[in-house]
Image (cartoon, rainbow, N blue to C red; front, side, top):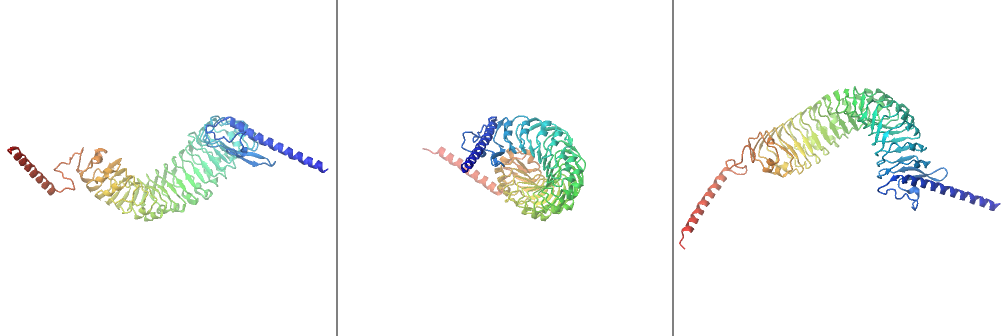
Length: 565
């Protein structure tokens, strides 16, 4: 009896071993069959071999888990960015436990492989950034188990079929950066689990934004930028309670931004971008009810009215862009000192107000562009205390008074533009601006001389000091800089212009300074126009000494000529 039990146990073990070996052999063979249809120029799949000592579960890109039958089964293939091409074979669907297939960033050149619908367990299909072409067929509905579909950055064209609404398990649908056209169907209410919807960068779409998108309570990212959408922003978007990123930029949207978008229902918003449309109306007043808002982009629209003081509730705001609109009123003072603000762009509006000294509290501020507004007041000393600032552009405003000595103390400052204001006083020393590339102080009321220390700025390339009241010479050290633009026209400068500056610049950049002289200029620097470092008395004495020496030389030559040998 004992011997029978032993034999039975041995038989079962042998059967298990045989079945396990057969399963392992089958999955390995399936992988090798899939590899056989692929071109692998970099030999990235060299470990995929039936003579390899490496177990197939450890082959490049392969992940296995232990199935309920205690056998190892392939569940994931991650072959992205391996320069693969060729054919995506249906043989891969013989891996019955395969749930994840990532072939992104390769060179597969074929239509959407519908035969992958045979992969009954497949949940993630990522074919992004390949050369996939053709239309999305109605048979897309056969991929019933899919949760993630990423076909972005390919050449998929045609309309989005209504049958795509059958993929009710979808959590991610990314069709961005393709050649899709036509109208987007109203099928999104079916995607109750959808978290990310990306239809961006499809310039041939001609569609209103489907209002049923507002039914997606789990949606976190809605990316529709640069895709030919027109009409108004659906008021149903108030239902997007989980939304963190909304990008509707670069479309043809009209009408007003629904004020409900700033309500408490969108309290999770991190980025709100409706820039480069044809929107009008007022600023979305309650937008800062989203306490985590980081990016607010309303630029290049037709918005009017003022910015509400409630903007100071956006304590996590980093990027504030409202340029190229018709906003007016006093610019909110507290916005300048938000603790995380990095970018403020408000140029080409009708804002007024002053730049507060509290800007020094914006310790992370990197870029300010407020050109072409009606700002007034003096440039505050606090500006020079912002050590992260690399661009400050405030031309075409009403700033006045002297520039503070530290106004360019940021060690990373590279662009400074204060042209067309009413700034007076001297041009300050700028020795600390070692990374300054462009300095424009044109069309102000500056006086005094051009500081020689400007020649110590190693990367200064653009220097515009035109239309001021500057006097004295052009510092000769400036000729050592690689200036692509040097404009000092219409000042009261005098003296000789260094030749290298004249030879590399249009004469118009020096005009309006009657006291300047040099090669190619109306005034030549002759003996009757002494250089600044030479006094008239010294010149006369020098000429006299030369004359005496010349006369003595003639006498000595004469004596030597007539001497008897």
